Length: 501
Image (cartoon, rainbow, N blue to C red; front, top):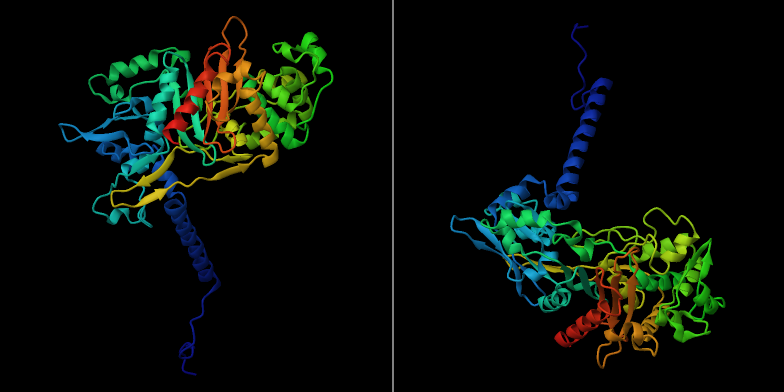
């Protein structure tokens, strides 16, 4: 023996002890976790982080000040950046009537509306080129402002604002087959040019903030205003009733004619109606109940549907949660958000009273569901993004939910046509009739209690056979829907059919 240690044979791998193996495995796990985390934040979460208002890169880009344009469906400029004398950029809004959806951008007062939700695109932080976001640091110009093209038509937007002038309220117009927003008006409104003006901005913005809540010009009533809907909600009840099988088009309630005089007694509370004496002793089916807006018929229907099914079908239509949209939306609720406490609340909710609160956007979607024969398209107002190098990203129409069978939706559509054109329906919603065009609709008068005037509502669509526009109109404290909201809805639908024949 030589006394030398045994050496491994030439070409044999070195022996690795258990301790070293454990260290190696631990390092593999740690570095693997770091790699996965980096991939998650840089790839999966990159889009959300880029749009986060607190992102330092976004804040730095906003200080740079140059944003892409916002244009309407025909390319009319609604917002653009113009150079200032000191090398800065100022936002300019040639059509302030679009302010509720555009919002504003000001270095002093921040941003709102599309200016906020599409800030990353307008500033060019999000690239339209494949892999462009990952290669941003290698680009010579970090920012590539994009133009945002809307589905909004400024001509219709201007008409909607004119209809609401001097009133508090909102109008939403939507293309049922695509979900494209054609007009979205809210009054009172504001002039974004005065907000971004360094000379007038501070005083003007302070004045806007000092106004009482009910007169707020900064509230987008179309997407964030929540109102008692009154009888326009009967269309949602009809959807829930037919869809769940709780009612049929032929459903009648034998007690209804007598209850027009005595009221429908529900757990000690009497549901009242009696505003359509022309029906006499006739029992009403679904079409008749929609045509004359019979509270008692819909209270019976609501109880037949039941609270759980009513809420479940409401969720199909978008109730119960914020609607996914290009700007923030408030959630509409059928039950106040806490469930129906008893049959009295359910019966009243079924004809649009009680703890039921809705946004105009939600009610426009209810009309659009019927117009598109049961399909609910995801609403959107942004059609395209365009970069300076000519790249285009199109936001295609997307089916959100299939809500109702086409035949059942057709039944409701024909009933809504009767509510506008029928012998008795004309009394309530006849002013919405578009001359020479089959028109469907439903008026609403939302009682508020006390001495306050009710909210006036209308939802509808035209033409009935192939709808190209669906609308929702609310006039706060406007009295009977037939007197104010109904003619506005008819005028707006007629205007669009002339603008886009």
